[in-house]
Image (cartoon, rainbow, N blue to C red; front, side, top):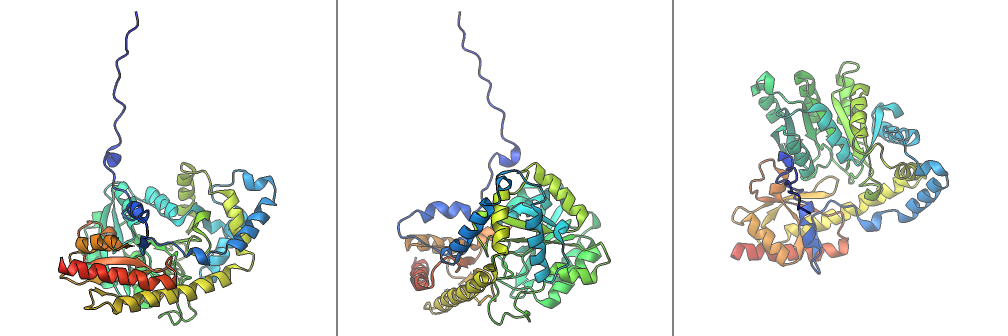
Length: 417
């Protein structure tokens, strides 16, 4: 006699993933499928500036190396890739050699590894606010106590940070602080030299790690302030002069996604050996190694002589697009949006006039066929903010005027609603 077995419900999701909140930027993607939608939302490099020809040559060279391009590689990264990235670090003023570099699958993986290695549930993590949403997402999933540090036009406000740290009980002091000092995402601000020094000194005084995320540092514009040679000095290079030997508190993260191609997924971490080793062990449980084929393509490209002129073209074109965006916003009647020109990067942060409801403006913008990221996406509490982030990188300069006009019509509609 056949009997139907009793079915037991499948095991429940872990509490953190019972009702998880996704990336607020990624969740805008369905809107992009609407016919005619123009996007000032995602921080994508311009498709027209990607060096497809040079990358095709690099890929051909990589595949010509034989079976090694198709095999597993070391968790820390291929030696040639690590050496090429160490040379990039040296060009940015840092002391580095191949053993100081961990190759990661995008710089976001590097941050996730740091969170896993450094934080336990309840540990305090400081973030500049407004902050990159994926950083907030990673810290929430780690059950960290996220504390925001305000920013202004000169970047993270170190006086406010000093006051905050002085008031914190010793048991609640932070394990790490996350910052994008060069043309931050989303504000586009550049941390001043005086504040860079103050930040490093505070890290040494209170014993926390500084996570310096620098995907945009090479995308500086002409006459960027505080940059005698263009690319700003890194916090890690400054800390090397201020910290005792072997106690550099700055972990440097960067990526080739904004300067070469996002599809390569080549990020990297530069840190002291003790931390780097622990992050490598954490990476072994995630993806074993970053794609060796992608690393070989990237290494070949960096050695091809095409990298520097490609970045230079991007700087000039992004500056042109940024001017078109900011000047267009400033020309909107009645000035519903207020912004300043960034000195580099991919983003403009705009404050919304107090009499305009942010959600009403966003809905009107979608109706008029233009997309941006609302300001609340960049804060730990996700409360409504009278601000928004616009990316000028992916929109061709000739299309920028139309995108701004649509935004202007949306602002007019939001004011009259």
